[in-house]
Length: 69
Image 1 (cartoon, rainbow, N blue to C red):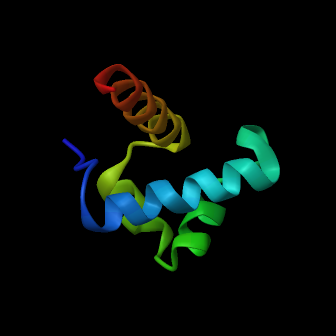
Image 2 (image 1 turned 90 degrees about the horizontal axis):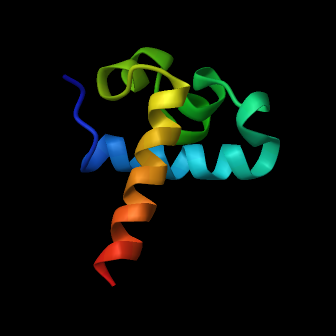
């Protein structure tokens, strides 16, 4: 199971937010997210299954923080 919190996972998620904001979900790629995060493509797959998994995690975090308030 991929780790989705802390350290590099957080760096990947932040990079993904920036890439998604810049080029949209369909214009983004795992490779572009990895480059933005300053890591290799393979490292992303240690934490997330694919681009959809990254987006789902971002939505889950945002939704969870909204409910927690």
